[in-house]
Image 1 (cartoon, one colour):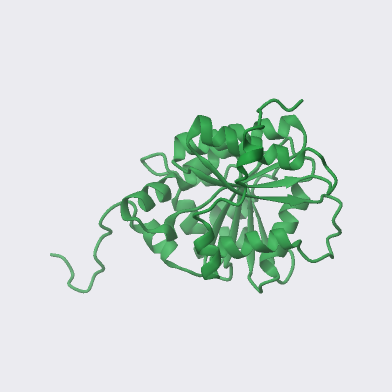
Image 2 (tube, rainbow, N blue to C red):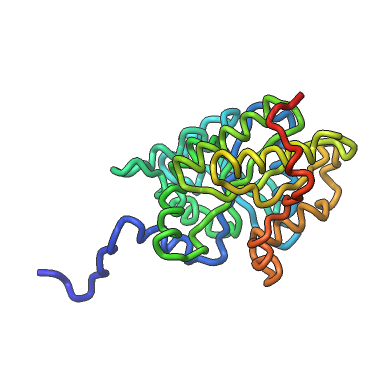
Length: 276
């Protein structure tokens, strides 16, 4: 006989994701790792600075190709494996950890719920991982968003690249995989390049053009990061704007999502994929 006081079972497998993304204080940010980027650590540090400047606590979940293997503690209890790096930033070495949470459908989305339970202080969770890992983690949330029309369940992957061809090619391949395998069609780009780099804007335009023409995807926004920036310096204004829009704390930022920041029609006609 069913106990009248027991909780009802979830209606479907997406119930956990609905509850996860209903926690408005937790912002999931998928960051696509790129082994061809020379300043990946600097880029993550600057991302954290952008969020902590607003008083938010950030958990960096590093499941990238170069990340350390998780500690034995992570297998028993994720919370015990999380390391505090500063007052506003915590870190979890998580290479290969998400697959331990895979379900019968091949999704690792339960890992996201486990992270929020293990780090109750975290208001932003940066999931730094290869595109294949992010596809398994977030494909279900994309499907949930499409079915329900609830944008709170939708995430926007952040591509990382610098102004060298190998890193840009890798970023485009990641965009293609996330679009086709996970249904995540809107992306952003953080590009590490010197302020006087003649290639930075052209690279962003080329990525946006290829995403649109060949994949039906959108590179909605891009941020240039100077890799020589000192860690003690405040975040650049472009990064601050991206953080505000990601968090959707301003009505103007929400409205701007309808008009991609990168669009410049006269320049778009000149875009070419070749990086010569």
